Amino acid sequence: MNQKIAASAAAAALLAGLLSGCTPASEPSSQPAQSASPAPTETAAEKPYEGTTLNVMLAYGGAEASFDAFTEKTGIKVEYVEISTGKALAQLQAENGNTTADIWFGGGVDSYIAATDLGYLEQYVSPEAENINPAYSDKDGYWTGLALVPAGFLVNNDVLAERNLEAPKTWEDLAKPEYKGEIIMASPAISGTQYAILNGTIQAYGEEKGWEVWRGINENVDFYAQGGGEPGPKCAAGEFGIAVLAMTGGTFAMEDEFPVTALYPEDMIPWTPAPIAIFKSSENKEAAKVFVDYMLSKEGQEALREADARIMARSDVEIPAEIGNVDTSKLIEQDVRLFGSQREDLLAKWDALAGDKESN
Image 1 (spheres, rainbow, N blue to C red):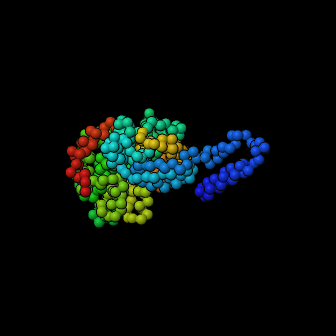
Image 2: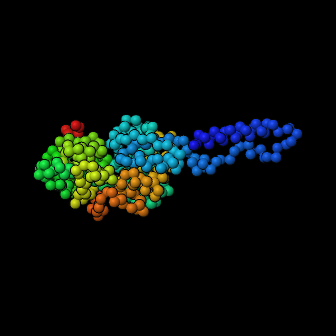
Image 3: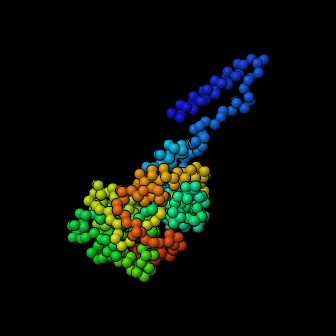
C-alpha cells in the first residue's frame, strides 16, 4: 500500500512538472514560487521516523508480540535479539558500551544500574514517567521500569507425586534435604531475575540468615541454568520437580499444557523492575525515545500486558488475572539501588558458594 502511494505521488509530481513546462512563456504562472515544494503529508507529520529500524536487546519473554502495534502506530520497525541481562552486560563491557543496539528491554535491574555507572546508557526522562512509581525507575532517568516481575516456584505435580514430596511453600522449604536434586534455577550471575531473588531474600533475611538459607538450597541444586528462560520448560518436561523462576503469564500458561502448578511463596515474594533504557551509542535516539514513550504509555503498557501478563509499572493498568492471585503485601520491601552497589560483592560470595555448579 505504501509503495503504491509513493509511486502515485511521484507520478503526480512528474506530471505537474511536464504541465508547467508546457505553459507559454508569455503567460506568467499564477502560483507562488514556493508551491513547487510539496507540503508535508499528514502521514509524514504523524510518523516522522517511519522507515527507521530499532535494534533491541530483549530479556522480556513474550514482549515481541507487542512490537507490531508500535510499528503500525509509528512506522518504526523493531528487530530484536533475546539475551539475558547478565550476558548483555558482559557483552557491553567487552565492547566498551559501543553496541549496535538502540534499546535495552526487560531483565534484571542490577545490570542496568551497572551499565549506568559505566556510562553506557542515555539519560532520558519520558513524559510518561510521571505515571510510573519512582521506586521502579532510576532517579536520574537512565532507565525506567516497564513492569514488576515477582518470583516464585513452578512444581511438576507428577514428579513430586512419584517422589512422595509435597510442594514447597517458603524459601526455607527449598533448603530441606528431601528436595536434593529436584530444584532447577538460573545462575544469578547470568539471570537478572535470579540475582534479584538472591539479593532480595538476603535483604529480607539479613546477611547471616540469608546465606544460611542459600547454602541449604545450593545443596539441593545439581547445576544452575544459564538463562532465566530454562528452568520452567525443564520442570514442565519432568526433568526436575521444582523450578525457581519469574512469575509471568507465560509461567502460568504452562499449567494448561503440562502437569505443573505455579506457586507464590507464602513467606516473601522477591521482585525486580523490568526496565527499559536507551543506549548512549544509539544512532537512532529520537526514534528510540518514541519507542520508550509508547511502552510507558497506557496504550503501550496494555499492549505489553496482553503480550505477556505481568504487573505493569503504571498503576492505572490493572493486574492481569493470568498471573494468579498475587498477594502484593508479600512483596519484599527492598532497596533496588542495592542491586547495583552490592552486585560485585554478592556475586563473589555466590561464586565461592556455588561456582562449581555454574555450568551444565
